Image (cartoon, rainbow, N blue to C red; front, side):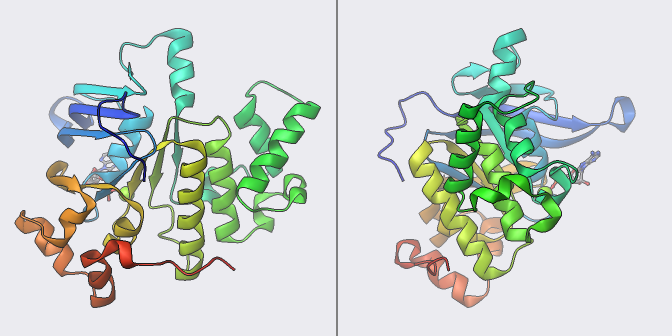
Length: 277
Ligand code: ADP
Ligand code: MG
C-alpha cells in the first residue's frame, strides 16, 4: 500500500461508464454508469457474482470493448480523445492479465520471443540489450533464465501465469488489469502468484484493477473495493468496508463466504499468506 493522498494523477479514472453488447434492438447494456478511481501503486478490487460484468469492465479498461457513455482516463489521458501515436502509447500503459494464460500465450513461440514482442513489437531478433531485459523479466517473476528458450506447454499452470505477468509488466505499465488471475490455480500456487503481484507492484508502482469472485483473495490484495451486480456498482469503498457492508447485496456476498475467509475479512491485516516454496 502507498501513502496516496488521492490528489495525484490517477492511474485509472472511470466516470459514468456504460457499455453495451450488440446493436439496435439486440443491444444489451452490460455495464451501467460505473465510476471508479485507482491511484498509482494502489489496488482496486472488483467483486460480484458471475455475469455481473467484471470481465466486460476489464475489457472496457484495456479498450477491447467500446463504451456507450462516460469517460475512461488512463494515467491522466482520455482514452476516447487519444489519437495516433498517443493512442498507441496509451495502449501500452495499460496491460491485461487474463484468467487463462495458456489461451493467451502463442504455443509456437518461445517465451523469449513472447517477451521480445512485448518489449519491441516489430523486432525480429533480440539485441543484447533486449536479451538482458528478458533475463531481468524472468528474474522478476522468479523463472530460470533458460525459460526464454522453452515453449508454453513445457510449463505448469502457475509458471504460465508468471510468464503472462512478465509479459504484462515488460513495458512498465501505469495500470495492470488482472481478471481472475489465480482462479484456475491450486491454493498454494495462488498465494505465490498473489505475493508476486504484490512485490511487483511495490517495485514498479502500477495501479491495479484486481477482479475476483473470491472475497478472501480480494481482502488479501486490495486497498479499495467495488462491488458489482448486474453491471452496476452497488457499493464502493476501502477494503475494510467488507467487514461492515451497508448494501444488502454486499452483505449477502460476505455472508456466503465460508468461515476461515470470514475471519480475515474481519481482520485483513492479521492475515499472512504462506511463504512461497
Ligand atoms: P463476469 O466476468 O462478472 O462473469 P461478464 O462481463 O463476462 O461477467 O458478463 C456480463 C454479461 O455480459 C453476462 O450477462 C454475459 O452473458 C454478457 N456477455 C459477456 N460477453 C458477451 C459478448 N461478447 N456478447 C454478448 N454478451 C456478452
Ligand atoms: Mg469474468
